[in-house]
Image 1 (cartoon, helix red, strand yellow):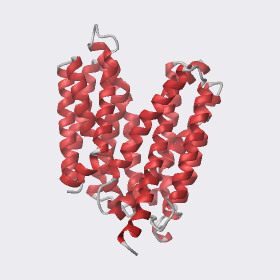
Image 2: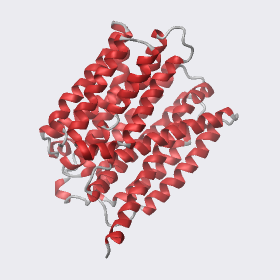
Image 3: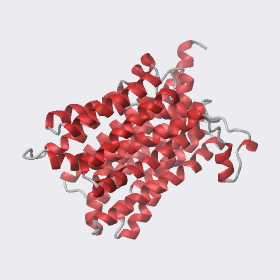
Length: 392
């Protein structure tokens, strides 16, 4: 077999893996735009919609360990295909509900499907990266970010045409379903995360946790994932609110902060694989987090439009590759890629739950700018942990 013939199937699997991330990001981008319209349709208050979104996050978190276990027992491509179908179908559910109870049930299903797909698609990406022999995880996460931007833009455009939330979510679900089925079918092949001997996978959940190789590095990776997604979740919820309060007299200027962060994140992930290959995971992780902490401190100290745009682009660039390289390292540190990524992803989702609530609670006790100092500390903690937990 020639080198080209040997490389072609691996390249095809990378393309299929990228399409999976793209489709999942597209679906979540559409849903992020339709949340407000679904809230209006069912007449839910902010507190009620917040509770429903909490159901989604908790469901995703609880589903991750189960999905990781399935990924170690069955062929990874089949598991990705099954959860991809579940995610696409569940994506349409929130558009057809008529009350809060129905929305919570719909988001329970969507959360389980999304959390499961998140783990198994990252597991497959880790296996493909290992076969490549060089860093490519950031390219998968860049596809997710791009898919989210395209999904949000598409939903906004269709909303402007007068289409209902149910129609947009259902049409988007059909598109996502087609892409995910194609990516699962095209990714079939010998590259798979081989299941461990059954004796090494205890049935009891507590015994499963005890069976994990809890090395200092793996604990550090879970903490990095926790602080990274805590920071991203809090920025997504509080950036515009903070800038709206400090950028007086600039109509619409407050929206540029998170937009700049998203642009920086996409650019950083698109170029992340080359940067990681040149500098190493450890250097990219600690330096990116340290620079991001400094940039956010500048935003809090000098609240201006120029500082906000420039510094949030820097924060996006700095934080863009922290999660991909953490997942990638965790996949090689634990006993299996699925187990390591599930642990890191579960820790990250815990941070995603804690972040917005933590900032809100601190803002009640102090002021919002003072509460946001916690995010500077969070990014600084990532920089310290990365110096020993991430690979050189």
